[in-house]
Length: 194
Image (cartoon, rainbow, N blue to C red; front, side, top):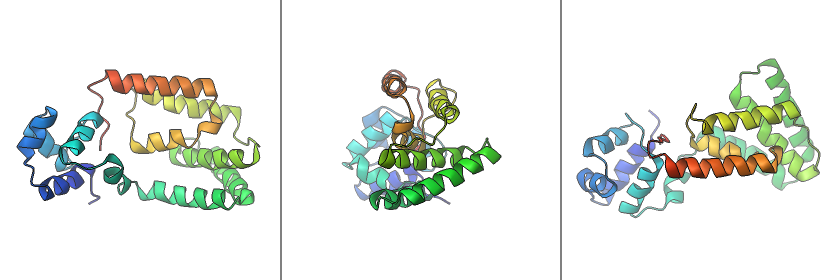
């Protein structure tokens, strides 16, 4: 079974010899809620996760870095390698291939977002935009849907948002970023499941 953030936290908490009762009390949740999260049975508000990390003296970057999905690692490696070597032909070829796949299966969210990342990198290197206006609207709608509360932000969504900035209008980026910060700040019930 894939290790969850809760399971990883539990190992670290035990290594620092902090009881579940003490950790839960420090962040204002019940011990049972913490233990359910540690077993992977429930989600936990991201702010609570951050506070729990402070309790065990672990930096956020160190905690989350090893939990990036293999899917995102592969995309990052592929795109970064092509981007850093200025391989615009590869980026263009992959962009067009993925966009073609999206045309054939418009409901495939993963392929669509992967295509957006490739198109974003290609645009950044060449200044040539091959991501259509309809796709840009779809991308903006995807992130807006998350903010409207229809879906929950996951790490992958933040990753995709951060790596498609060239494809979204500055006004939309500002609006989404402002809304995201406002949403996280004002919604204590937000569960970003880790």
